[in-house]
Each structure stands twice: as C-alpha cells, then as structure tokens.
Image 1 (cartoon, helix red, strand yellow):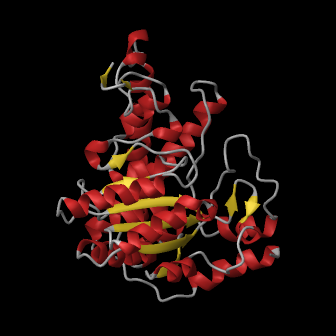
Image 2 (image 1 turned 90 degrees about the vertical axis):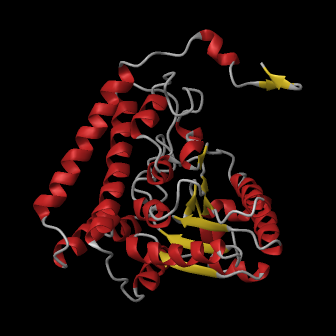
Amino acid sequence: MKNTDTIQLESDVSAKTVVALPERTKALGMYESMVRIRKYEEQIYFLFLEGRISGSIHQSHGQEACAVGVLYDTRPTDYMASTHRPAGHDLAKGVSLRAMMCEMFGKANGCCHGKGGAMHMGDISVGAVPANAIVGSNIPIAVGMAYSCKLRRTDDIVVCFFGDGATNEGGFHEGINGAALWDLPVVFVCENNFYGASTHVQATMKVQTIAERAAAYGIPGERIDGNDLMAVNEAATRAIARARRGGGPTLLELMTYRIAGHSRSDASAYRPDDEESAWLARDPIKLFRGRLVEEKVATDAELDAIENSVQEEVDGAVQFAESSQDPEPEDALRNVYAGEGEV
C-alpha cells in the first residue's frame, strides 16, 4: 500500500455526515474525559523519561475519541476488555486516575495492587476487566463474559477493544464466530491505527477494510472516523443498543492514529512524514474543542478551565502515588491461586 493510500483512508471516513453535538453537560463531560486521558498519558511519558517509574508503556494519546466515544454512555455494570494499550479505555470506563497512577508506581493501593503495571490495569468494580497484553487474547475472554451476561439474563453488554494487528489472530475469528452464532451482547471495537507495531495493516490482509470481515460471520460491520468523537459515539450507541436488546454483536472499525510510537522505545521512523502530518493535524481533542467553541456550546475560557482542573488532578495523583505505601514482600503471595484454594 502506498503512503498516500493511508491518507486517503482518512479522507474516506471523514467525508461522512457530521453528527450533531449532544447537550452541554454531556459534551463538556466528554471533553473532560478526553483531556484526562491526554494529560495522564503525557504525564506518564515524562515520568518514564525522568526515571521515576519503570517498566514499559504503550500509550493511547491520539486515540481518545475512540475510548470516550464508545464508553461514555456505558453503565458501571457493563464490562470492558482492553489490550496492552489500556490507559484511555480504563479512564473512560471510570477507573480512578489516582489508583492508576499508584499502579504505575507499583504501590499497594494501585488499581491492581501494584502487580499489573501499565499493560494489565483495570478495576472490575467499574466493569474494567484487568487488561490482557497478549494480542487478541481478550477477544475470546470478552465473548465468555458476554455469554455469562446472556446466561444470567441481564441486559449488560461487553465492549472489547483491540488493534488492527489482532484481527489476524485466531482468537479474533473464533471469538467473533462464537459471539455471532450465540447472538451475544458484545461490541467488538477495532482501533485501526494502521500499524501492528511497525507493520502496516495492508501488508497483513487482502481485504481493504477490517469492517468487511464482519460479513463472514453474519454480523454488522462499520468503518468510522475514529478521530471524530461524535461519529464514534453515534455508532457505538447503535451497536450497544443492538446488543442490549438481544440483537447480537457488531464490529466497529475506528480509523485513528497514535501520537507516540508502538511503545516508548519506538521512534516511528517507519511512518511517512506526510501521513503523520495529515493525521496529527486531525487531533481528536482539538477537533472536538473547535466544534464546541464554533457551535457556542462552550467558550475557550471554560475549556481552558477544564484543562487546568484536569492537570491539577493529574499532578495531585502523582504526589499521592509517590507518597503511597509500597507493597510488602508477602503481598506477592496474595491473590495467587494454586490447586483448589487461594494461597
């Protein structure tokens, strides 16, 4: 695939009908949620550079509209299964920013008690199942959770996120086939940022879109501009409603772009300059902010105040995490299962 074809994909999805803004409270809430993800991710990046936290990171800034657009209207009792890039999904689902920051510092009061780190975050109390870093492996897990919802006769649903690279894994095809066969309440969300690590998506499949793969399993598939918050939210609302009423799964392909590389050691040298500039010019937060101001939903001053408030929240979370208690050595044996019981 030529470099210009990637930019063409962006123009194809962005040419669709503009979705109207929601009422003011929701609009500002969605903006705040996107800003929280962005500022958290930026802070994490600098904390790693400064050597204040360790491990590795796979960041999601640039993809905020995907997480917020899909998850903003979900319930705490709905489930969400994420990937090795979970921070945006977790924050959008309601996981505490403080608890996530503590997790990054390996503290006992982290959302996973300091045992999960960047790639295994979550909080089941808000429906965020701790993330799974094995590419595509969260898909059959999400199908199992959706099967549980159906057996228990609830109207809860499952949202399952994965990247374009996961769609060539066996778990993707097996999972979607099972969910379709059993009409399970799960929404499959592919965040197509064009690269599985450094490999372009069109080098890994013969079809032109991931969304068209849904037809093989008899379910709806739709490609959406993943940097257009309201387009994502509108499509997700339809897919979630379909799942709740027993209509079965939907596959959403969200076209988006990560600002950073695959991981913190990736300088993204494989991405063409014209491709990067075209996509980074369509920053989802800037696009949504522009609409809020243009359509007089909010003023620049109001949006600046939201951003400043979120930055204070992030700064406070760092201070709280750094002063929090480290786990005790014996905590390594807690929540470990062996044989028939808990150790």
